[in-house]
Length: 298
Ligand code: NAD
Image 1 (spheres, rainbow, N blue to C red):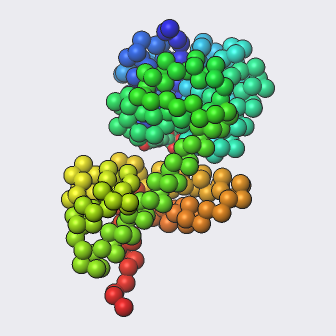
Image 2: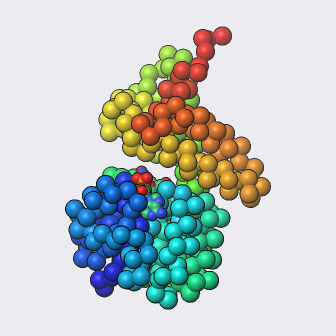
Image 3: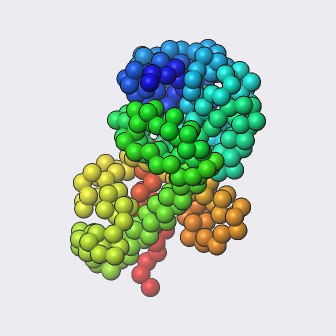
């Protein structure tokens, strides 16, 4: 069924996601605080809305793709009073699990329905409509959002109730952050032992060291020609975004009293690394930080 969708936040991710909804035949009313972001979306067929409220009060469904939890909660405070009763709010931003649960509570208190549906797949996935969505909320809400998620991605997993999508996202990215550091340390150790990158790759990629950080996003140039290391670490998945996601994971680790030493340490290492390279470098560039901070052999 064709819906009228309000799409709030038309940045690197939201812009192409909104464009894919237009391609799928939906009417999309878009809003962004930055005129250039709105302009690009309008060029792709999105109808401009002067305010978030004016977009939302005509919509069957609201999608948001914003930087952080405070933006999502601020948006909800502004627009919930203007929405039609029962409107489904689908937040695709990556935000704190507690903020996501607060967003659900506020939406429901205002007579609306909510789904958290963060994504993996990056800008390339947003453009190609190959994102993976991780959703938290009710079965009915997931089923109702499904055609839109399918128009923007290749896979959508219903992970559980409110906040479960965000929980899945930060658990996955904690695995990824820790494993990228482990793979990077192993390559730098191999260098100091006189073992070639290719030899370590040929063994570990078919042995128990195999993981995505090694076999897809390999942090040294050579063994996996498509990995960012082969293009001077141009992202890919920027170090700043990994630092953000590990910060969210660390918040949840502390709030839950979980003994996750490596997850917390990975958050510290990526925060320091992102301060140096920001969003200019893929997160696999942390191998250079490991190498730079390594000393002379004892
Ligand atoms: P972005 O900064 O490019 O886009 C965010 C947009 O939101 C900006 O255009 C900004 O002007 C707009 N905005 C902020 N507050 C607003 C408001 N109140 N009303 C309307 N517009 C508002 O960020 P992005 O890279 O598109 O990321 C968006 C979200 O997706 C983040 O939560 C990020 O963590 C997550 N994410 C990003 C990637 C990626 O590769 N970029 C991958 C997965 C998840």
